[in-house]
Image 1 (cartoon, rainbow, N blue to C red):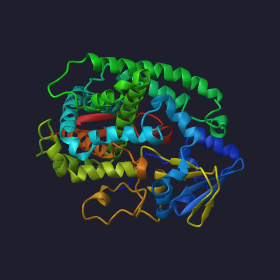
Image 2: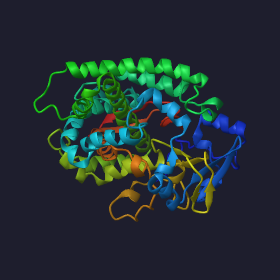
Image 3: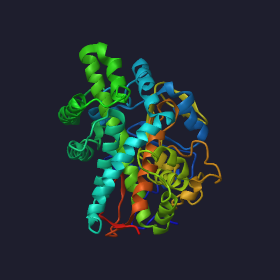
Image 4: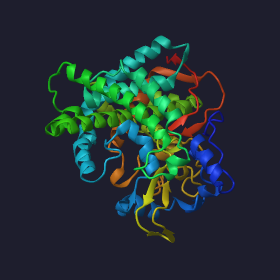
Length: 452
């Protein structure tokens, strides 16, 4: 199998870019930041306005920066600027004691042992989505929007026990607006310290006011919703109980955590499902194999969790889609002090990149790296190289909901492709673009046909 010709990976430059070219690429598509040689080397070093940037591909170097000595590297001002309008002081951006406290609260609610009731709620949302898609079968369908709505509904139901269908359209519009207007950094975003506002920070401030109002309405809906039997143990209740004694500060932090979990819990999963569907539309034989694997299983609320272990091929498809189109194309850190990383001396203040986009397509780490091949993730396949596969990051900052996201995406694909055959209705290229997440440059139309 090959990556479909209608899915075009941005071309890597032959040599390092000038500072003007770097600015253009960072604004248009940072997937083109690193040279063609970077996909074969253990590291690449580039310069930008007198400051060095290091791309690390060697496993030991990645482990040192993201795991063993993570405390010597911090988030960059630019990444904080891009994320803060969405998540405030939520888990993604918090530090120190606050981060440890938040993670202790959130991690158990998304751990593997907590999956059965979460998958039951996910199955109910998937069933409703199947009904909507069946009504649209035969016509053109925007699967990107459909997967965004479904993932948001699953996130709302599983973590906060609230239906989000009334908020999905507005959330999608705000996210698109921010991605297009505010998530493309300019020169001042890149060079100013976080304590010095950039001109675009004013626009981000006004966006955040609108975003916070939307999250406030979702919280109000949660507070007004009927308390179901056994409630009081979802993520919202745990967070509210932990922060209740902190007054207004606790209310603000609760709002930021709800926003963080909704964004992290739905946007990246929706994109994984979209890229999976785009790959599968070009490979009907893979669709048929998913359908055959899923057809004898109970994927409804009662049987969904138990059936996950019987979907190894479907899970492998999800893993391969995450390899080719990782939700976060780059992990960027800034050295707090001078560091020796392997043979490299990384100066204080230098930027260090670990790019899942590059790692997952690295020619020395993967056989036929641009080929779509789910079988590389099946049980019994050759083991994946250490730190060669990082769709959820690694180290202390590894995604707290990784297992939940994998289970959710596997269940959605198994359910949808058991019921539908999916095809593209056009052949125009779809290009991945790295903004906050790895997004398509457009939402191509699909056609669904009920599977016999």
